[in-house]
Length: 167
Image (cartoon, rainbow, N blue to C red; front, side):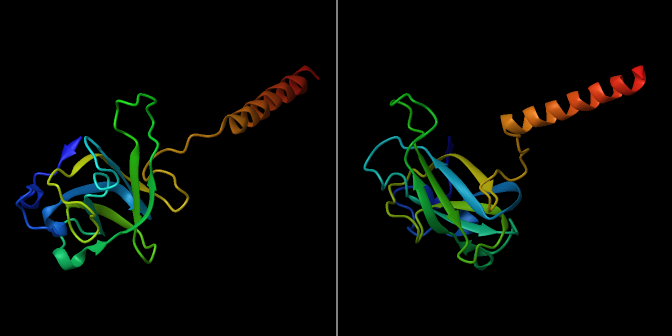
């Protein structure tokens, strides 16, 4: 979990944190969407889930006007752990209104995208996604059926070479 320790992260801080004051994440490549995995340690939900604003840019050192507020497009409520005591169940997906690409995301406490400002913007992880929904900079893992076809093709080549050698 990453705790936002920017000046605007305290309950007495200024609501509407600027992108330059948030946690800036390098997504490792051009993304069309960003997934923000939030840590939910108390209620109420969805307020605890959406207590931040995501800002997107291609320049991590941009002034506040060089960042664009992302649009919330999905909130997923079922996580990867079956343990009900683990709060991994919420993922917020954001993108630019124009679906343009970006490399950096700043997640701020409060701001115009937040519905709650309780002073503890907690993030488990942030990840960039392509327009196809695959991870940015990641390796695509082939499906099992594809691997079987490749294996059969290689086996066929090996058999045909043995047949050619024996004749």
